Length: 449
Ligand code: DTR
Ligand code: ZN
Ligand code: ZN
Ligand code: CA
Image 1 (tube, helix red, strand yellow):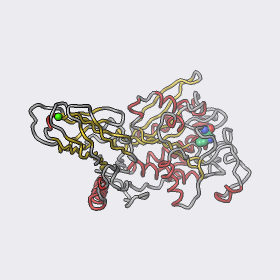
Image 2: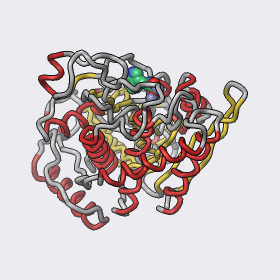
Image 3: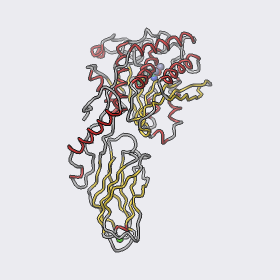
Image 4: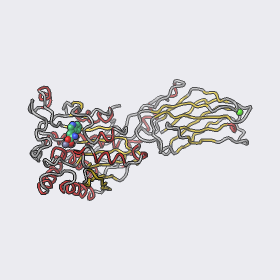
């Protein structure tokens, strides 16, 4: 369950279609219907499929760092908010993304009397209702060029985005990348982005991955432990190369992921340590120097291209690509069904009754073709008004009453455009009998995603 059943080396739509078929066939062949136990609801078991990520060339990541260093050197030694070196950094990243086919947006804000910029880059395609976001702050402090903090995260995210373009990846989720301004002033840019995102767009972000300080010279390997599923995808990658990790604890919420976490978006990320000291136990795990800071040049003028551990930056770049490929190309198991087979009496010419199905473990929104299978036994179906209620209470009319609809029973499958609803939560079938004499009951009902 936890590992993809098969991996394919290249992204292409035929491979994705073939995998979807495989999963559908497995579903048909393998799993007993969840309705075996009356009254129980639950999904048929199936594993998510996803594609294997490419290796991210560390040479390319370091070439971006060299460019950021040159920008700092040419602009008074830093790339800080409100300084010319910051805008030059934005221009550099934006030009690379534009040339690679991304749709880029520059978002301006004001902080401490200066104009700040966020750069957002969308990779065309994927499900617009399921957005996987990845970001890094691009600003430095004014004391230095900010190559580890956070040229490293910025360059790793940039090179991973460029790898998406090289692969011409066709992800299932929509991929969005961001470079934040004014993180060093208190996560100003990412807060501005999140606060200005309409609630409906926020709801579409299934996860946010953050890289801040990805190549500390005396590195630790820290994985954000905020969301179990996002944590796991990074931990699995590190387990695969036999490098132990620790949960990130050097100031929870001290980077841009906090802006997303604060509004309920699942977050994950990687970190190699800042000013805190590496312990002897950590040196046993990872090598390096005990009793010394992970980054002795944290927030100072010596945070230059010399202040990078290449191995750490290489690993974190590859781990990030793994996470984006895994999360971005996984498909929710197709045709997964949830059923409630408990009988519910529908009182004659009386109050509405409901039957519930609780959906969990899915990501993002329900499909535009949500299938609602209804099995109601009744002696005059024209009496019945039937609605599907989404987890937030939104009602979708499935059937109206009718004085002339004289047949028995409602045994039908309705298709509902539920793409505006989160998949997870408690869905209800609401049934009301609005005319006297004939009666019946909900025998079972089913949702198929
Ligand atoms: N906010 C970072 C440094 C930092 C300190 N603790 C953490 C934990 C996780 C990510 C980053 C950090 C800075 O830019 O200074
Ligand atoms: Zn910093
Ligand atoms: Zn930082
Ligand atoms: Ca009736």
